[in-house]
Length: 281
Image 1 (cartoon, rainbow, N blue to C red):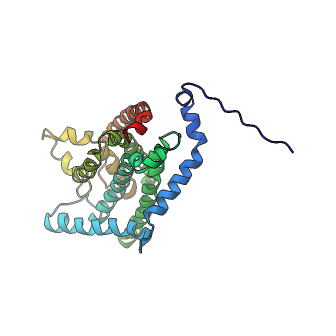
Image 2: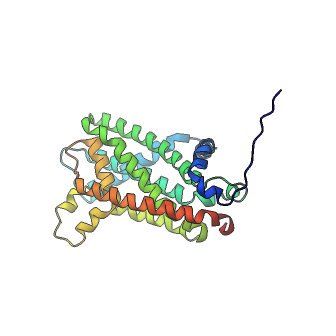
Image 3: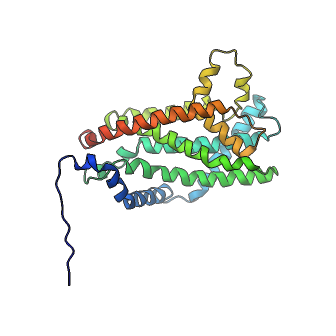
């Protein structure tokens, strides 16, 4: 009977040189943490995943009443206003939930950080899975509401994965920076919900970016389209609602450039600081 022998090497800087290989080798841990986060999300809840229907549907109904009936805002021509709002809520909620989960992922897993070594990047990545599951449920809700309005997405829907990926990368790019800061400064945990709330109103969720385009003479108009979520939300709507939905290609280009820069910087920042997590926690 043969016994397998494993050789353990203690090498200075091993984790630095083989970080990405270690990340791949620990992919099962990524699966375990993702499964745990999903089960904890709906543990001891009566309605379970139904909350992923209830929240966006309720938000849509309230926003349609306030902004369409009371404020008299108009959506894109030829598109039911509730569909425009629900599409914006769906992709924004995906980004906001993923960003929030990533930002708090290290402190939420403090017991793991202090006990065993593994690439800490696994924790932020695993936290995005719950947000993706909620997003898929919300997307089903959108299709149900679209069917109610007898609205059928056309060929533009093939671009939908592109904007889903951009939203995810934006959440990772911004979230990793706040995850590191949150370990050192716990005030960040109080700041994150405030930022998400502000972002909800400065992004085109209850209104169309067409209204901004009509005011290009205003000083803030160019700054508006530099918001990386503007291009993602408009592109997501365009994919689901077709050519009648407002779409400004340059804003998507801005989104790609800004997200790419933040993703590179945040990965570098996270890698430089992750060895200090144990001391700060």
